[in-house]
Amino acid sequence: MTTSIVAGPGDTWGIPGPQFLWLYFGLAAVAIVGVLIWRRSITGGPSLRNARDLTPTQAALINGDRRLAVYSSLAALRAAGCIESDKRGYLHQTALPPTGASELDRAVHALTRNGISTTGVLTHATVRAVLDRTEAELAQGGWILDAEARRAVRSGAMVVFAVAILGILRVFAGLDNNKPVINLILLVIPVTVVAFTLLRVPRVSAAGRKQLNRMRASVRHLAPSQKPSWNTYGPQAAALSVGLFGVGAFFLADPAFAAEAELQRNIAQTGNGLYDSSSTSYNSCSSSSSSCSSSSSCGGGSSCGGGGGCGG
Image 1 (cartoon, rainbow, N blue to C red):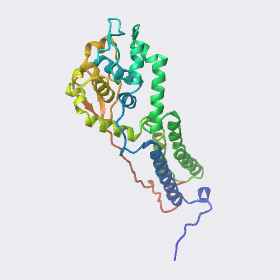
Image 2 (image 1 turned 90 degrees about the horizontal axis):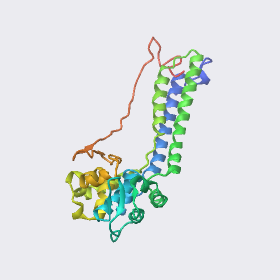
Image 3 (image 1 turned 180 degrees about the vertical axis):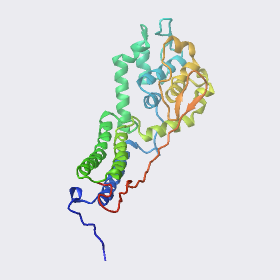
Image 4 (image 1 turned 45 degrees about the vertical axis):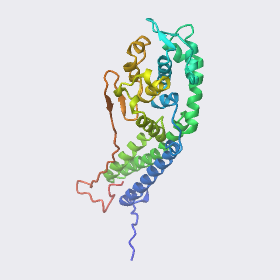
C-alpha cells in the first residue's frame, strides 16, 4: 500500500510544506549542478596533453595583464642591451633588437627610437594592436575568456537566481497563509549565495592556470627567489621570468633600470600567490572551496511532519 500526500485546503499553492521543501531542494540541486557542469565546459580550456609552451608575451597576458606583457618585453630588450632609461624615465634605443625578438619586442623597440616613457609605450596604438591580436589568439585557444565568453558564463547564474526567486515567492506566500517558513528560508539563503557566487567569472581558464604552473615548474631557475642572471640565460629567459613570476623579477634582476623606468611593482598574481618584489620570498596563498550544510527543525512546537512543514 502506498501513501500519498494530499494537499489540504489551506496549503500554499496547493502543495504541502514538506512536499514543497523536497521539490525545491531537488530543483535547486539540479539547477546548481547543471550550471556548474555547463560552466566548466566553457572555463575549462583546452587539453594540455599536446599543448605547446606559451610565449613570454602570452604567459604575461595570462598571468597578469597588458602592463606585465610590456614589462616582459622590456626585460628581453634590456637583457639584450638594446634599451636604456634616462633620469626622466624615458626609454632609448642603444642597439638593434636581438635575433628572434617577438612582435611585441620589435614594436616596443621601435617606439624607443626618439625616447618614450613606459606609459607612452603602454598606450601606443602599435603596442595595443599587437596585444589585441595576442589576446584574441589566447581567447580562441581557450587559455583566457574574452568578454563575450564571460557574459555567457555569467548568464548561467540567472538559472540559479530564478530558483532563488521561486523560493522567495513561496516564503512570502507562506507568510500570507500563516504557514511556518523557517526551513524554506534556510534553504533559499544558500541558493541565493550560490547564485551570486556564480556571477564571478575567471578571466583565465583552468587550463591556462595549469599551463602557467607547469611552465613555472619547468623553469624554476628563473624564479626571483633563485636570483637568476639575465646575462647568463639571455633575453627570452628574462622575458619569461617576468611573464611567469611577475614584475618583481625585474626589480631583483635590474633594480636601477626598473626604478628609472618607473615600473609598477606587484601587478601580476601568479597561480600560487603574489610575488613580493620587496623581498626574495614568494608568498603563496591557497583557497579551498567549502560547502555548508545546515539542518533545522521548526521550533516553537511546530512539526515538519504536519501542517505547513516550514516550507510555507
